[in-house]
Length: 338
Image (cartoon, rainbow, N blue to C red; front, side):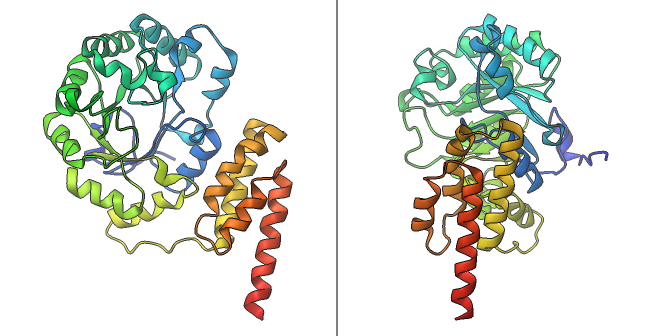
């Protein structure tokens, strides 16, 4: 089926279906292919891979190429690379372009995690805007794909200059920009400054995607109205909650928001997510153990969630999880009947 592209959406360097596209953020250990597929089914317009080490890609480390695999149903999808060496970043971008064939390459200048920034990757690059520009230019020269960037507002409060950083990125050739409106030293504390996003939107002539403190469908609408950003990126708000995208789309379209999912729908979706993980990542104890966190998020807010999570955090297989959900629903039905 041919994608419908609105006139406003044409400003994006890759096809999007809505005037205000919704993005699933790149998150280590979360935005893997199974979750990306699920979020696309629930209305995410664009997804981005977990952040991938350019050094590892350039060295041909096999498991990284496995991490970058995606299903055609995930498109449009970006592969996000991080690193602090422009030459290595360019080599990795060329390899990703040839081998993986995503819709765009995204450069990570935003990750605040210590293991990334200790080698000046992620938001560590923001301490040297000359390096930022060099990386963007060399990556653009190494691929025919659109090149986008994700930034924070600066390294710390003394170097906080979201507009200045964004303008330098655009000057170097960034074709779209996502701003998480916190500094690196803030990590995830305090509040994201949506006013900064609005100022960057005003300053740039390419799409600006807003990110930070989008936890509910109402937050998506509020960010769009507050900042006039071209798109909204959802990170932690999507944990165990792919319905957020569909509900946010309702609000953006001026429709009443669809109802929150009942426990039965939550558990059905959780198990669908689990089966995707088994199909794409292998039916192993490791897959089940890594999936425990997702089950914890899917059960948030349901009656008896604490005891349910306690049992789910002990599973060794997806079959055990299915039995736990079935028993919970059966017990709930008995209680309702009584």
